[in-house]
Length: 148
Image (cartoon, rainbow, N blue to C red; front, side):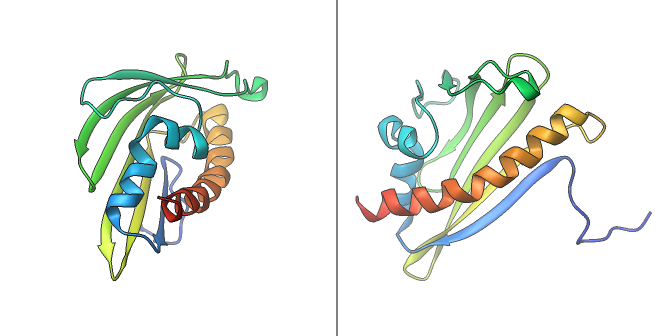
């Protein structure tokens, strides 16, 4: 089996982007509930391992999504790493990890959204929709960090 690095990973969305602000500011944008709401969704997040919380958004009928994302904080390393579970309460059972690495005067922000079923058409549709959405969120995170 050949491993073509350019082949699309059907199991994950992997992105990274340079943000021209230090990790402390990017971390705040990622983990303060009222700031998180500005770039992602209304939420009941608390930066505590084991905390169960929800994001609430517009339902997406085409993928059978009722608009509520059920999450749990799996791992936290302040200003370095945030990993949460991400479930729609039905078929999706994903993990979303943000990693922050200092780079020059700014931060390289990595996103790994993992656990998509390569054989499930609805999950692959979700992966394509979310894969298009995450880059816009990076831009908003940078804007929020700029204002801190």
